[in-house]
Amino acid sequence: MCGGSSGGGVGGGVGGGKQKMASPGTGKLTQQHLKWGKEGTGELFVDSEFPAAASSIDGRPAAPSSSSSSSSSSSAAATTAKCKCGVPAKLSQVSKDGPNQGRWFETCVKREGAGRCGHFKWADHAPHDTKNAARKWKRHGPEAGYVLWGSSGPQPDDVRQGSVGDCWFLSAVASVAERPELIRALLDDSEWAQGKVTWRLFVDGDWARVSVDTFLPTLDEAEIAKMSKKEVQLKAGMKFARPNGSKVWVPLLEKAVAKVHGSYLAISGGWPEESFRFLTGAPVHKVLYVRRPR
Image 1 (cartoon, rainbow, N blue to C red):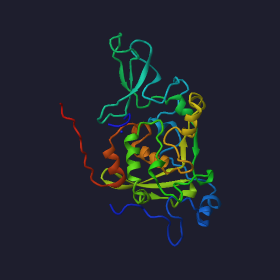
Image 2 (tube, rainbow, N blue to C red):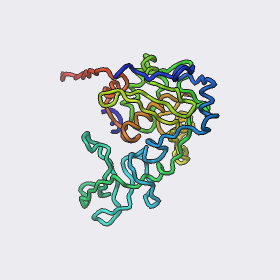
Image 3 (tube, helix red, strand yellow):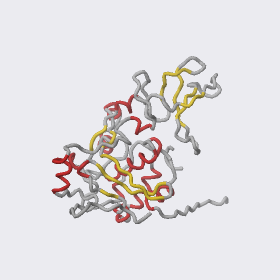
Image 4 (spheres, rainbow, N blue to C red):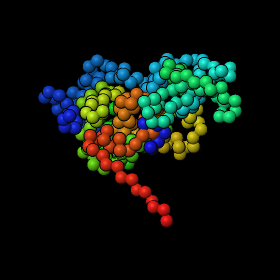
């Protein structure tokens, strides 16, 4: 495992009817694009299925709770519930493969052999981490000066990993981007000016269209304060995958994959071979190299 957890032709086509649209990802908007995005409803697309909220980061449906303790967005956070020791229980996440992988549960805060009470309870509705509940999401669309991949097209070096352990996925994205036409075929950007992109991904044995808006989670001031100037520049203010300059196709593809899995934390850890099938729909052959003992 890499990281921390895990029909017809490809591509839905761009444009509609007799309207002439820009080629996928170029960011070169036609007058019709501009009309739809600005003079039409005056509003940009907002994805209610995968909102710009803490639930899209941790996968928990609970509303943010002011009584929950502040912690990192990793596997441990404090809850208001108490274990048998009479102290606040710790919130942890199942990391092992299986049907409960990624599921949250309450456990005793004490270490093994240090008088642990053995408390255990599923915490599907635990309060969100306060940092993620307060995290700001910003638009990364054409109205903010971003393009999907511009005239250079999708390139392997556009892949810039963030703070979620999805190297298993992004490494496959970089590999597939060696053939840019394969990435181009996955994208429908006909509603890019409206703040919406649609990716065609191979999910559960069939091609599925996955639409997302252009909101992306950003780093908070406390996180930035702990970084060096070089780190701040490299991170570009992004919590997860970051743009390469103004090219934002990788973070939006990562967001689509997070949506399919239920949250960003749900894609922390996985297998690269799964990613290749996810992106291409093609059978994947895994080769293991075993060093013989001398």
